[in-house]
Image 1: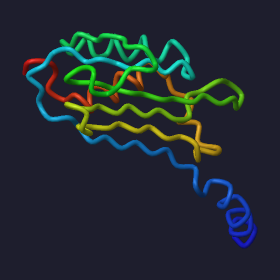
Image 2: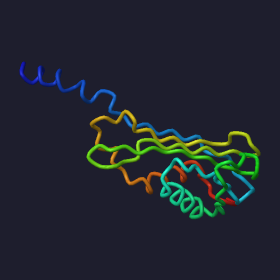
Image 3: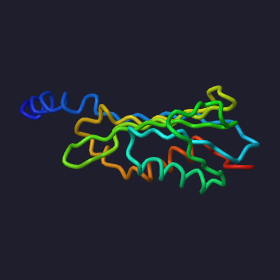
Image 4: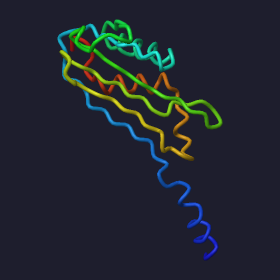
Length: 144
């Protein structure tokens, strides 16, 4: 019994802080169906493709804007960022999607696995995670 407690005391700190956090502040219903997405060239192309596809599946028209576009160029505008890391395999460690209505913050979704440590839950399918974030960020879909 004492050996088990000693092993537990040694191993437990390895799993401390191995958390994955996800927070979503959903947008309110929009009469507008077009969402302009400002391109972020620092993020893998696959993220933007998955984001556009997820929006279109909810009935929105996703329009890609250049990286230097302003958040007030369209009624509904979105920005995004994401990072990947290597740990036995490439995985998305962080994703953030922000939505603006007339230039004002309207919603935000954050996925953060930066402190996942030994948590194998960090090895997710990025496209599915992006779709999940969009589903939570835009709960009703376009025109609903």
